[in-house]
Length: 110
Image 1 (tube, rainbow, N blue to C red):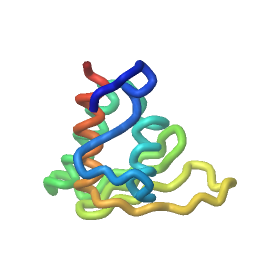
Image 2 (cartoon, one colour):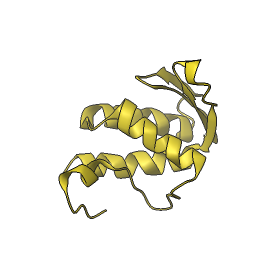
Image 3 (cartoon, helix red, strand yellow):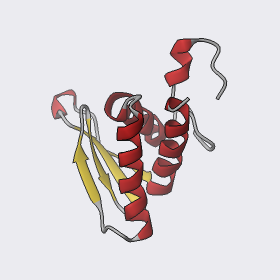
């Protein structure tokens, strides 16, 4: 992604991202609000997701700032930490979550 100003540098983008797709929008929210622009933390989350995808781990769940991420080998669930807004849980393909995390790690590490 090419940023034209500093604010755009932290808008998540990755190959295959579909703007307006509920799952991709939730992945973006997790990256911005939960993983944030913290390279060490982003790397840790990516490592946990990769452990699940590879079968090294059977799953991983983490309550973060705004979302609960429940990572499965094929499908991951993103749900709000606080349910008072009535926001539904969203399921995403774990490989898409991984792709977003890989791109996010590169984006915030520059």
